[in-house]
Image 1 (cartoon, rainbow, N blue to C red):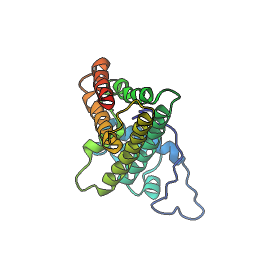
Image 2 (image 1 turned 180 degrees about the vertical axis):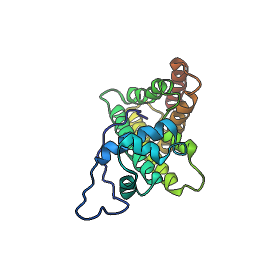
Image 3 (image 1 turned 135 degrees about the horizontal axis):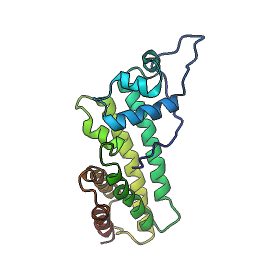
Image 4 (image 1 turned 120 degrees about the horizontal axis):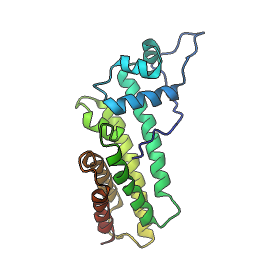
Length: 213
């Protein structure tokens, strides 16, 4: 996943309407960008609402009025981050290069960024997945939807490679997409310990060879 938080205007429905005659006094997109950095750096459970108030410059009541609570703010921030990450993945996979090179470049992105962001940030999506509590159905649904979108993009990349004759035509694109999703998330975790980019790139090369057998 891309790790730059790409500006993305989100249509987010407030948890409660602002009182009539008192329009919201902050830029929701800017607030989500700042909140995402706090959650990304410290994790959901270690982040207090006071941390978010300080980072965003928005009063507690105003944050509650738009996002409902800390959890709602985190979900909205994760949405924003995911939109930027997925847009970057689309760009890499649809680059004007042969399909196998586009996929390899998209996978190699993780080998470059994982060591650079190994501690403490890693990937916001990966961090949220690892930190998720079993009862957090809202976060589970959000992460599952994000993963489905990413897997769909990988599946489309596999189909393009099969059509071009560079990937094994007998491979099930959905199964391969799940495999690539699993591998890239694993690279994020492994990259927190194994900082050598070449060692991580070797994992990508093995995956690419598996697609052409």
